[in-house]
Length: 391
Length: 85
Image (cartoon, rainbow over all chains, first blue to last red; front, top):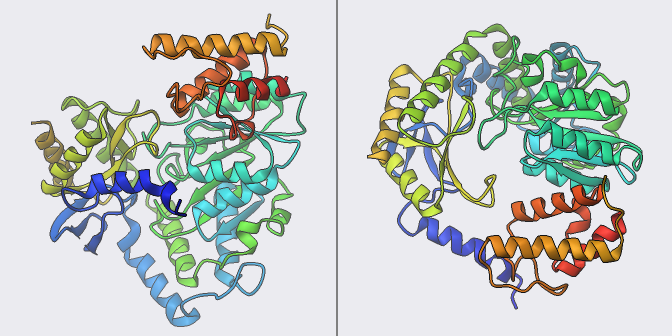
């Protein structure tokens, strides 16, 4: 038996997905032309599966900040945050995030994955319990597994189920950490955060929200679902990423708990990895400023995703429960979804194909993510592409 | 009012829940303690979650998913549930 035999099923699935053409998973984007256009399989397509929600990857201020940083600070820090990898920009970005969220502390990570992995695996441990939404991102599952705490799932977006589970645990563990997401990455639906806050208040649990797909999108200042629902102050920990709305790479955790700053000295995912490059940090800082100064980007994104959601619904696609920057069309059969993905690409629209087990349930998804940078004409062409696969 | 969990009533509950699943999904499996939940019954991760939830509700217990990693058979599940009570 070979070391690689256990990957045979995955290899077979990948072979099946690629036998009729370009890979729908890890699709090579040969050239990126703009926030919304690229070359895929030798042909110019609309990019509608890149999570570039505010379209800031080509923002002039962000590009200029990155260039200037490269010139002045070089290509990389060559070390971890606790060694030689904490530059002025890293500290400045943490201060800016603290100010934006009106919370005492912020920690910046090299990726969003590491933010979840580092925080979750460190702040709870043996004797504690995590109760997390069943549809949580892999980074939350991985952090929970590494924590040593007892891990429990509650039914997706079901606050009553959460309450029942937390109640069962209350007298048996030291601390309970509830984890949910703002907008969920696959279906684009939102957590019932006010109801979850009620559970937290009644139980005395801690509450963490991952705003990876809602930061920059929801709330009067773009801080996410918790801000939009008026309960930001009830969050013990807010996590997110810079790789979506802010068009760069990295992750963050903000908290009003005084103890957060000390946590950074205990997090392996923070201590034993290289810090973000100075240029990445510079582009994030510039993008954060753009996000705060240009609320019209959020309004444009909303117009775009509402049009696509309504358009696809009218075409008869089965979608997630509410409009959001992610609009996912559901297919019962993976092969059917694959054929639809290929037809959509042939029509000049690139979206994500997601198949089980990466999807909730046993169905496959054509996952479209909209951008504020999509023009009305591009939205029309996205809808026309979907109409072709329905015909 | 939830039943107090012991080996006997837990065994009965798990066998019943697994057998119910087989019957409603037209699977001709006669469930015993040695029946493999995935390979023989064909439970998906969602099905496993529902089975666990039914068990938790019946006995008012909380089964952490960390303890379920090694569960393969009906008997394994009974053991984990009794331990958690």
